[in-house]
Image (cartoon, rainbow, N blue to C red; front, top):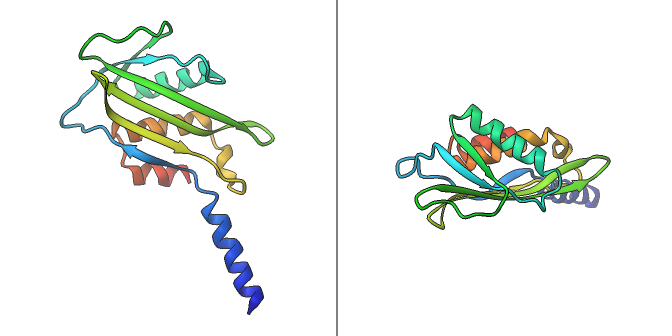
Amino acid sequence: MKRTFFAFSVITLVSGCTSIEVVDVKQLDRNAHAPKKVTINSNEKVFKNEFVLYSMTRWAQENGVVFKIDNKGETASQGQYVMEYVVGWHWDGVNYINDAQFTLMKENKIVGYADFDGHGLLNLNKWQDDSTKIKLTLDAVFNTKTVEEVNSKLD
């Protein structure tokens, strides 16, 4: 009996610590907002920033949105959409994205947000394609897929 309880406890604990999903999501209200042009405030502090920006612009091309990359930190004109991001990488044999936040704003108000959480020591999905993680998180922000759809493709 003790062995069964112990095995069940370990499985429950491990499965709870190995999720890969988008959390803390505020999906864009597609009825109130239809951004076709977005300025990305490039975050030069992000490791592999060129890769992150490339993945973001590929998502934009696939979804009919024009992303303009701003490397100077200038503020966008009034009425424009602005995307800010932070991407954290982890090393476990290879580098992989384990945390990312994408925030979409208009006139300094958050209109969309998603936090990708890829922590999980025993989850082998943590090594899946990092570009896919970025694109799916953007799908959640821009409400092109439901959170449930995004999470089912991540895990």
